[in-house]
Amino acid sequence: MQKILLWTFWAVIGAALAFLASFDWRGTETQPFYSKMALLDEALQKIETNYVNPADEKKLFYGSIRGIVHALDPYCDFIEPEKSQDYLNDLHGNFEGLGLYLTTESGRLVVVAPLEGTPAYKAGIMPGDRIIKIDGVPTDGISLNEASRRLRGEKGTTVRLEVIHSGETEPVEIIIKRDVIQIKSVRGVRMLDPIYAIGYLQITRFQENTPQEFKKSVDRLRSVGLNGLIIDLRNNPGGALESAVSIAEMFLNNRTIVRIKERNKPMQEIKSGSNAVFSNIPVAVLTNRGTASAAEVLAGALQDNEVAILVGERTFGKGSVQSLYALSSEPSILKLTTALYFTPNYHSVHKGVPCLHNGICYHRQTDLDAASGGLRPNLEVPLSQNEQLLLRKLQQQSEFEGEKYDPTVALAVDRQLRSALDVLRNRSLFKKTLSYTTEEF
Image (cartoon, rainbow, N blue to C red; front, side, top):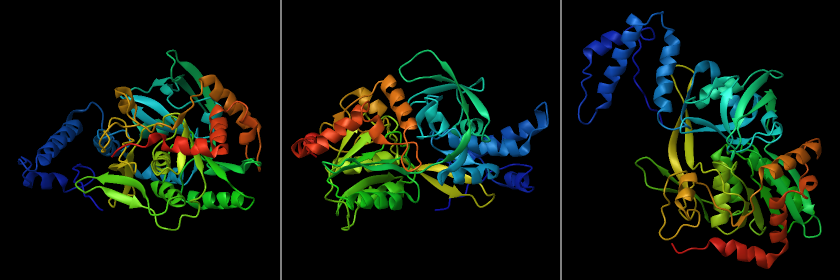
């Protein structure tokens, strides 16, 4: 899909003003947009003529696009040519910075999740934390693109953050040293309980190669006998939707994975094929407030199809799909929200978006539930902030195949993981918990 937006700027296109003079910008009832373009052109001309200093034309041009895009929602963005390659590197899991996945809520900069093992994670940044200052500069009204620019930097340099932890009122100062962020999307693979043959793995983020890594890891566990699997999606901010769908297909035979609603189009249903290689494996999925976007797609698909139970905390609540458009005029990228997704049973994930099914919603028991969005786990096991911090310290001290992660080390203090193990050990309890979300549709 290619969408062409006409932008007027005197220094970029020499013939633009002549074109504008000849065009009827008054607009019509069916095309009021053009009258607003005339307003933009008039404002730009006033800036050129009257601003106290000569304007940086490129800065104004890119800023005009960013301002329009950022008015849509927090997840839309314009990435200018100089930053587009860094952005693509980020998608592939390689960049220098802190390892934070962010959003904005009411003009405030909020942490969705720190990527595990990164400087931000080690410094104690939590899902739901508010970053109110970066190097002493307030973040009120900041765009995600600008926040990313300030937080990134060369390995070894530091950034000073003022953070209000979730549930707290007073800010704390945290100084973090930047590092190279190399994200291994599947890690911590091991047979967690050899007696009951219950395996474990963690998906930190969905990248292009995540389905291949995931299948290889589960095959490795199956080679020694596997009667149950724990998939840890805590602090997984999402990533490539296609990868989450591919993993869901490994567990579902001819079932709905996700429903997607685009503009002016009927609801699209994405279904699995008939080659589910892991369809007979009982699954428990660990979630928390840092489980977002594509991670919620996988969790919702397995939960609604009664393949898996969710254990832990309500997920983040990002149920929108972003598409990238490479602009042809310059090597820049336009990131637009192009769809909302719903679980197989028509549950809405996105904050503030109503569900599309009839009857009482398991995930939306109160107005607060609807406002916060996300998926409600079958088995709710909240962790205190102190428990989360202790869990991180223990994880960082462990090692598994060269990685600083071994879930067995933290098992003594990880009540969510222990709860998932207990349910998978007891098949009758597992089946009872699976049916906990069954409703009339």
